Image (cartoon, rainbow, N blue to C red):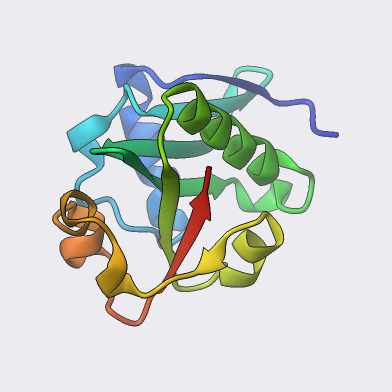
Length: 146
């Protein structure tokens, strides 16, 4: 088990979050649309070591910007952040959570997500910055029904 503390993101976290996403080679386009309200960060001591977002589009969520400092990979931080965002989706009574990934499809499948055609996502979600262009067309689209 990790020793990180998950808490709501704050506007003052933006620069550190943006840097973490860039180092993880994740898109930052559209980040400000629902930041900080849709995001949580993980801190270890006082250091921000992880982030995850659950943006809401109609009755579905978009899990995005899941990133952990590289030196802490494999210690459960990412899994805890994803679990937090899925719990938030359930609290919000969302019907499903979608995500796009170019590198972590197997990781998310192990967490219960399944592949789904990108063309099948709801219109509100398809118009989001992440789906409309921030992620390449080659990105895998995954879905977790709640």
